[in-house]
Image 1 (cartoon, rainbow, N blue to C red):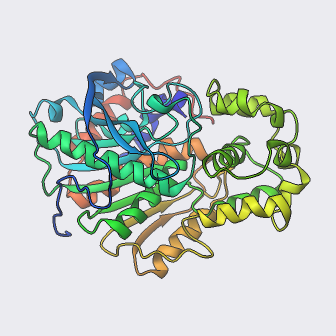
Image 2: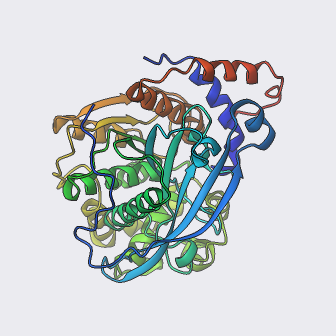
Image 3: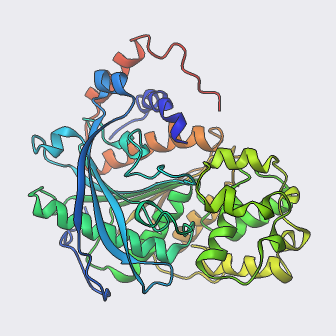
Length: 431
């Protein structure tokens, strides 16, 4: 998705069409409850980044600063200490303390598969969309296991417990840095945001907080187009024999085999040529997701999975399915109680060809059944990438502004100036 970052400007136009109209403050001090390890936080570097260079600078001042740091968390076994990296992002005014931060946001990145695609390594990063001069947010992101300092290890893709633990460790590490550097963060609103696999991570993070961190209140969780019930996605792919993002299920199956030491061989679940190229195409991290899609070379699930893997009711297929069921965030067997103090916004375009929007409907229904305040958007607003860039980001900004009581008239004027600049005449939005 990073190669589509220029489409952010079309998304910004959409913001102009939206109408912009508390829970108690909680403790912002780092919390070590439940840990048997010291976070041992260390700042690696501080850098200036840009999103879309001249356009961003001219109209929205999308320069932003990043504080990249190391901290200790745990690996996939949930007990072995590992060193991970995280990122704090903010615009220059907030960074230089010329403007007071308006809120804190934990941003969960979407699917990555290639070296140097993580938040701390890519200048034109999706989190930068929220770093414009009108928002004045401080965003925290975690690179997670399998990236940067642990890039030689398989990533724990869509593995909720380890993702949530590493993310909360990253959050606490970031809070310690911000407090040490004198940023005014006490009592700020807290937003939890993620799209696609990042949406899965956002709900996993929310679940962890609800179960373990009564000191931390999240005001708003926005999660879009995510495989909340992984089994729903597995079933849909097999039953329709189609995926517009053919690498998704292989990435999950590889992650689950490696993370949970599942006792099957890749030839049990994958057909050739994928079966013989897992190390080269996926575990090496030499290829991005679109490269992997091209290498697999089909959109038919039955051309990728063996007959045994396509039958998720018996044998090896059921073994994988049962592990997915165990690690899904809603659906059969899940009974965690989300915070009724948190507002939820669950979005998924019904026109998504990457994964069925039914997963979003199921997550929203689960939250509603637990008494939560849930807003949804499941109308057909295009395919997965276009929807994420042009709708999810815009609507998430609007939802945050409603909570913050913001006035985006100046923001709207900047959008109009950008629209009238002629810079968008040849912008391609056909995804």
